[in-house]
Image (cartoon, rainbow, N blue to C red; front, side, top):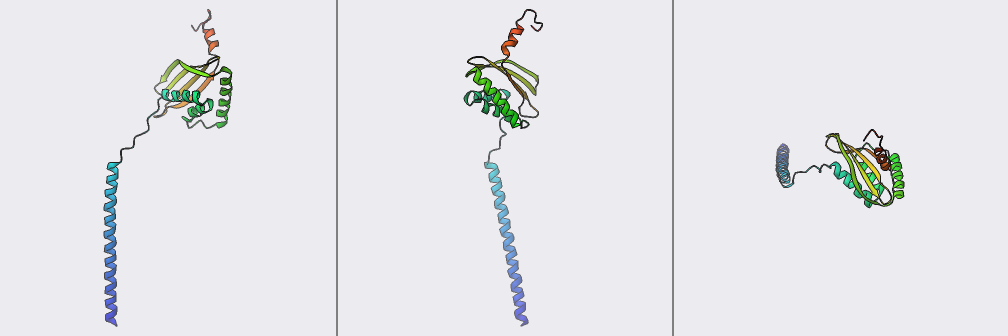
Length: 177
């Protein structure tokens, strides 16, 4: 009886040794294959490029394209989406409603002309545009800020008083001329 038990134990140990060797060989092969796959993937995959940095003029051009083709709402949504801090959807909605009402009273959009472009620093710029419509112009003023690498909207204003300012500037006693 003892001989059978010893042979059985020996057989058990050999079987376990074979299983351990087989598993370690399999794991070693898997590691080599995955390392080769990783190296192949790294050499075949092109380097991921950072998205292009939008310039201020590109943001403004896209804004006016949306303003012309889609109207006030998509243009304002696009502009305010450049800055994640503008989250007050109620105020943005009010702005869109007022600008849309003004736009309806001045007629169809016909183009734009830059009034002034100023740079306070390399990270803070101001653009003012005469926005032409069929009946009368509107002025849009944009201020953009670059806190790190991306330009974001800092301020946006509009008004329809550009003609009154021009008249005031043309007066004889105007000290600002």
